[in-house]
Figure 1 (cartoon, one colour):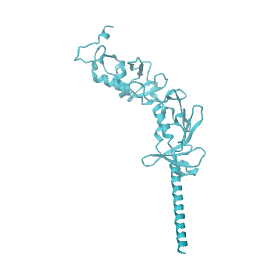
Figure 2 (tube, helix red, strand yellow):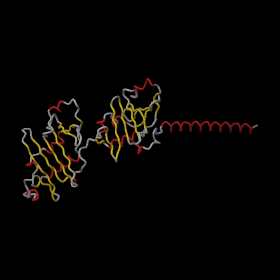
Figure 3 (cartoon, one colour):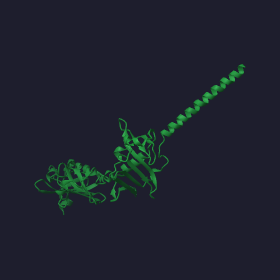
Figure 4 (cartoon, helix red, strand yellow):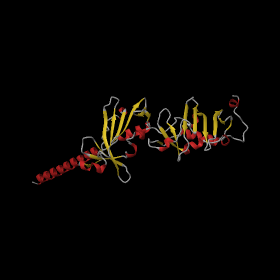
Length: 323
């Protein structure tokens, strides 16, 4: 009798342990499912086309020969930014199911008005990733709402995507003007006019590790500043079609003209308007788009020869003066 009771107690304990084990396994399985990467089985290296759509705005990018470009004008894209976005979007997790009620989609920015439709395609146009992104969430904006097309489930995923997924083509165009570094610059030619339209010409040339301005040895600080500005020369924005300043700028007769030559004989040019409310206007090289550049980026180049030449030195560039 006692052995029968012991067997029953043992059986009850065993069954209880089994139930607890199964429940724990189910919980862990559910947690793994909820924290799983939604697109982790996809190969992001196969992505050759990217579309970000919001209403009538569409940013369309394509990849070729190691670089991304913005369509339809094939304007160079910020390839590092695009690659970072693709890596991030492939890490979406269904961390938390927030709703399956379509009526609440606006609350999470997943309705047709606010959501951004993200499409990643391969080189043959096959869709690899298709998702709608909504608002960022949390007090520190560290997570984002999303859903898949045709599915009611709306999730919250770790990661903020709001600042890196602009639906305008201009959001993805590279802002850097020159692909060079300070140590590769060998020549700089500058023509500029002051507010009284008096013109100045400065030709800077590197010779045996020394810089010369119009054939005379140059001061180090202004040369270093120019080289640094050229290497970091970004533009701030594209000029909008309704920008009234476009009526008064005259890029056929620029106020500042800069020509840069590198050690490997590459030549870069920039021609800008006069300063208008803290900005100068220019035409992006090889494209017909007008860009705006903060005037402080250009001020380093609007120096008179006397401000660049080292008057304490009598050294001259014989090559320059033998012309």
